[in-house]
Image 1 (cartoon, rainbow, N blue to C red):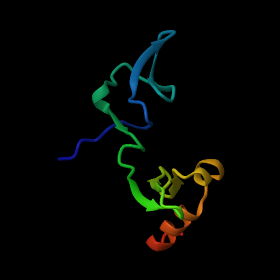
Image 2: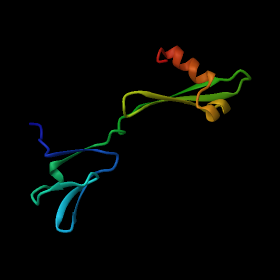
Image 3: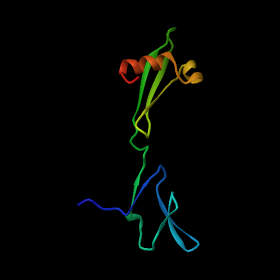
Image 4: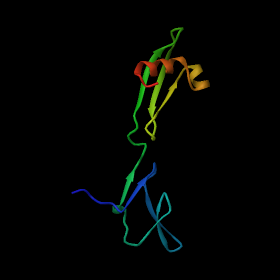
Length: 106
């Protein structure tokens, strides 16, 4: 049987219960709760816990090795970066563009 939680907290930091001015709250979020709520009633979901990251080594035009990194974002998209000078300076380079085109994820 699946446990039912009273509260679901989606945050990178785990929740905790605190009392301020005689009132109990779940943090993060300042969620007011009554005195019967315990940590067992709170489900914590870290939106960044299962994000995937893929690194692909590529050769530059002069033979230097660079790493193109494709990272999944918490919104379901992807972010691409490259360790080459252009990738570091502009954020986009021919290496990253080529890898994304080859993977079909432009």
